[in-house]
Length: 534
Ligand code: AHR
Image (cartoon, rainbow, N blue to C red; front, side, top):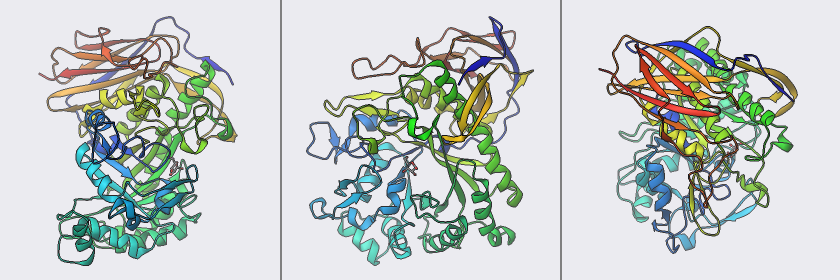
């Protein structure tokens, strides 16, 4: 594998325009969503340490993790999986903890799960985080009755069997639950089904996942892997009658309101995904080439959906995304624990630029996963319990102003700088599909909310700085504030010994000159610029 810069100028300048007075679609805050599975040390040791732990906790939930995540304004948290969701029987996770049945977590390390973190603990976590729950029901090995009962247990307020059971377990009032997943990866760990078989099941489970009183469910059918657009098409066809009749999608009928898909950044081959921190420049670019493909995959699913639903009433949900590298040496291969470098942060910022542009269809996205698994926001040390914020965490924090903001298209003038990345494996780490990828090394997106504009800029070039000049049209701007996330090398990462090796700093490389925003981005860096509109 090799990479070749196609623009060999010492001082690369990228020019463009932002029309500050022409906002477009809303960027749902839910594209900044999260994911927590019973996998490795995500729940146990990550979110949850138990009430007897010396680590400060509330009901067993780590308070330092809660505090760190509250700063991200996380909009939703998906649980309990992932592949685990289709093995999970929720009734084993309620009632006195010492009486809960145990189970084998056959997907992740074959460890014994004691069900001490269950429905009440998850809902308490969501309340502490101030976030909305997104629950994945068990379609693969569970029953329709089990799913129906779970909805009632969570959301029914009257004197009925499931509501009474909830009260007996200490919770009087029903919870509000909107986001309801109908299984997970049914083409694989969720049941090895065909798209047609799953589409029929999804309608069946949707039928019995009923709205209780004022609680309206937003049912999300489990979708494709990567660029499997056929899967999306089969699900859209399964919605046909609901769409054709013009009925309001979803409430109380057999339809679902959204279709998900999963797309990880894997620079493969799958058997050798590479190290999260020990990589060379070619591997750096291979990962970036994979990351930038997300935009084409989003557009592909959106195009299929547009053909059936031009009014965009059905949402697209990317409920698992992020980098997937080899596990850290010496750790359980089934626990998917990887470090997180500046490179991961740039993968995240590129994804968010794509999410912002496609937010007219993309209603939710969930990083996999929040703590200690894959592209995590937080890593906790197994021995000392120390908590580290990853470079990826900082991108979520720096970008949070885009949540529920109006997208501002950024029009680049002329071609952005590119680099040919040769021999990149197919999406998801598929080796036979090697190809050369034209990586655009500058990525920019913008939005406006509450009388300000937020511009996010990424320079993916590993070695060369770039100057971005954007004409700001339509509205005058006040004094800007800017922040920069970078380090000496893309391999830089945070550890308990040095927890701020990669952290945002105030940035003096951005200014407004005669109505032009000028940003001088160092190599391998991410910046945000906040502009008050006056
Ligand atoms: O996030 C890890 C796993 O990746 C999930 O459990 C599964 O849905 C996907 O294959």
